[in-house]
Image (cartoon, rainbow, N blue to C red):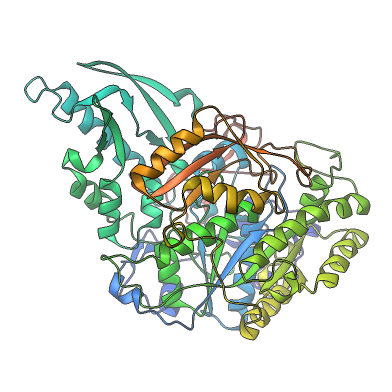
Length: 612
């Protein structure tokens, strides 16, 4: 019996075996993508990209008519995480593998491409863990198939084109660009704080240029929220590159090179298909940070998944206050929005929500002091877990509110996936609480046993939730255009109560409210992406389990991103980290190197990999 067969049969427990993620990858070995393509009916349609992955050409008319019987399952976290994350990817993979073990091809997982900066420089990996991993995660973590590098390159091409016009003596700065007001940033897929502010020279003088990590950049927002190439072209063209000397915006389309940029992105725009270690299909495409972006994979990946499987699992970044809210109010809004470029066919909704309840996260929210802060190892503390339930409750109610059951989460289509369930007394604290609310729950052991065995309980619960169609109809928290809401009204009437348990306490830094009102008069209503800390409901990291009554959120800035047609509201006393700079001990400097011959067929020379 092979190692993989033993995993599928549940004969190996990873906690007992003591294997790290890369040991498991190497032990199972890489697998060709062809059998997955054949099972999905994609053999003649998909374009292989090495033996391990493939790209799927996107035919908008084909996917617009996908079956309305497909079900979207959102995966989020129901507690604010430790810096090491909650395990949503592992939970999603475990759920996927368990569903496909019972009926192969019934489920597919739409996953964000890991940010290269975070994967290499901080976390060491973002492709799941244990037996619940993406096959070839060492490549997926970076550079994968180069989609993010293509986004980076387009940002440089736009900047080069604009500066060429500014430098031209013959043309004489035809767009009247003010060199002191360059709005668009460069994009770079790594933690490179040293490059966050650079000076560029032109005939007109020096210009300050910002550099953002790719997963925070507006180009990737446009890429991720576009449903076809026509929308991609329109969105890129509408990005505000700079301002003129008279104060009016200069849009990228004025450079007259947008068709070339779209052509360069045509291949990256095709969704990528990979597989889990156990052979389940995964679409990995796009993906923004959950604190300054949508925290979701591309809309196209959802549309492709809907065409291919009955269950489409969509993971949203961070906890429900950031990731799920944006999956609902940004991603699903954009997927269903009317457009002359796209025939939506039928309205999509989130049919079920699986919330990861990580007991380690509840200890952090319950203010338990870790024994090992670097590795986030906590002592056994059922009372600390119980203190953290206040954080879980607010997340649960907020998610249930999208189905009209804010005060009765047990009536909404929500299930809990419990992880880090190592102590029975701690587990009982959580399960008793969920039972009291009527929220179904399952222990997810896919990390240690593999989804085929360790995720069976989770898969059964999820299917039951979907097929019962319990709860009310899915509805957005708000629709700014339909309700004609200004960004200030969205924050005061919708978002502040969402974070603060019904209270609407906001303060504004000097001039921000006036700036927001001016932007609204110019651009009208649009959805609002809130950029704030992912470690609490408030605008500071340490406000756990929840902010005290009367706490006021600080709105430090507001801007309009014209390409994506969204407002970005920054909460907190410090600006969001659009270019992270911290490199931790678990990142690249500690990475080992595996030669291609040791990686059992992985292409591409030397391969760094992450956490031991």
